[in-house]
Image 1 (spheres, rainbow over the protein chains, first blue to last red):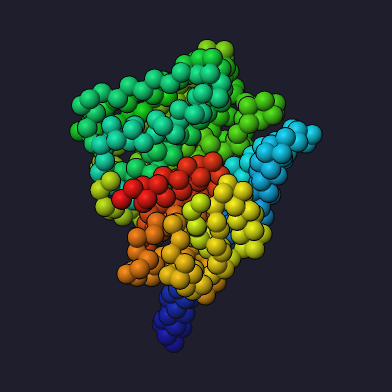
Image 2: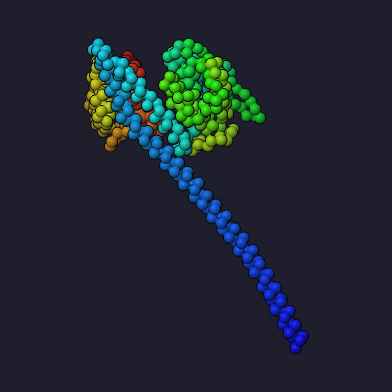
Length: 306
Length: 125
């Protein structure tokens, strides 16, 4: 009997013990399960937030792109009619309102420039900019860019020198984007320099088995302080508030240029000293296929060689 | 003076450009969409065509292709008027057979000099 009781107690103990252990395991499992569940939930929530943020950003950019197009149409009418009135007044020798018409024209052109830059930036942010890689000679690129840059230089009596070595060779990347980046830099240099000198140098460099092409635009203009330089690539930031009034521009040019460079696997750096001019250097891989761009755009397509 | 055709659907822009071109001595014919543009081109044989691209009904690309495919109209130079906002407009314009393109709002003096060079080179050959 005693034996039996003892035995039963032992059994009960064993059972209790087992049950306790099982309970502990269960609790542990539950804890894990709930931790796992909350981690999973958190991941799902994070993913939802991320994708809805991306979607919202895309929507915003698409909205901007459409808006910009809608804004351009009436603006084109304002510009066209302003020009037409000026032409007709000039022909008729009526000079009374010429200076007023010039203000309408230059203000609407400035607004147009802003809309174009916002459009460019929104397309870049929406990932709607494709890279069209093609092989072209650097000499040819310079030949394209120089005549467009020349009239910008003349406005403030600046001299443009272009140094492209005879053996500069070719590169394989998006020629249109390189051209746009260079023209942005050259037009900036022309804007912030007066009776001075703007230089475009082209060179090549090899590093870790990768060939790089360097485009350096330097000017003898007003230059930037270290603080101004820190803000140079930020959207809508010019050296200070009076800059736009005095020199024009949108404050988006450098932001766009940096996006373009990074899309092509390259980078842009600035060097400047207040009152002594600025130098902007763009470094791009000679073959876009050799480097994975930091800022990957929609697609890279091979275009017909230029 | 040379007879030219302006294909543009926006009435304000069409009137404005037509008036400025007429003041420069051109005889300006107008069309409001691609179909009308093709018809006027083959009927009037203008010395040059200014073609807006986004048009209702038949768009400017299709119209340019048809004009460049037509026996009697293929010699007429076409300058496409493209909106900056539309991606790939220029490439598509050249593919459609346009000889050149100008971005809107047009740089009028430059447009005039382009037109002049096409019309005069056409006259020589």
